[in-house]
Length: 310
Image (tube, rainbow, N blue to C red; front, side, top):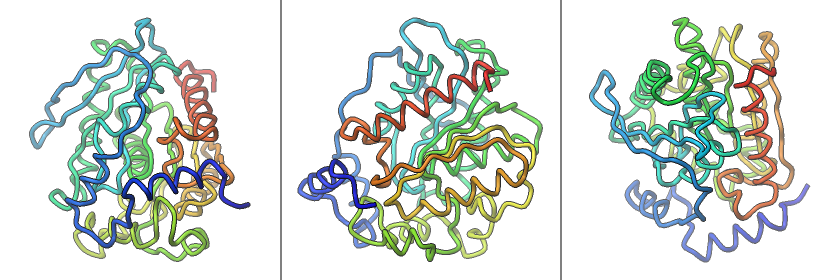
């Protein structure tokens, strides 16, 4: 299927606004370009910024709660950005929307970024933050036994890793994982979806190589299952998952492959591919009908899992 007309219009707009292939520039240039990309605000919610204590020091988080005050559970959210970009502000609208539509507390985590803090710093921050959220669930307004992890792109990878490590440590209990176009394999960039969508879209194959090169310390890290989900050997007993993929996304095939591995290991998995869409289409939901539809699928499924309906 061809690129969705709305996605094509959005790409044209982003290009006119200065979107460029990040693989040709510096980290600072990429961060400035990302920070200058303004998105419409999300819905009203109760919002609080904090610095939480973790083993290495502190991590900034942003806490979202519905104005009604009623929460069916809690979600720890990890933003995308290839482990190099991204911020609390850049994912503010999505986190507000999830909190309001799923009637849950959302804690967005500003984990350390590469290349200043290479793998596994982000993993360590996300694990520590999830444990903090679980320990402070009552204060945050939800039942500690109704905790989910979520994220998009690199953040989805971190959410999946947190779920795996929580299972191995038997704490904290995670009831659901929402994985929006996860980065599932840093070992190879040769899948059909990488080849089909190598250039000209929001995320490129060279861009993903650029992200990976900044994130890993050496090639051995690429084979670590905390970097490459498809390298995982023990996936049994994980919480149910919803995996969102986009047809015109280099990451499409590896995200769907991870879903299949989870399914073969006996886990409950739903994989939803959105035709005509590009990477980041959920975060860009204000401009795309399919983005709004996908976000609605995310929040409906998430709320049901937190209520214990599935």
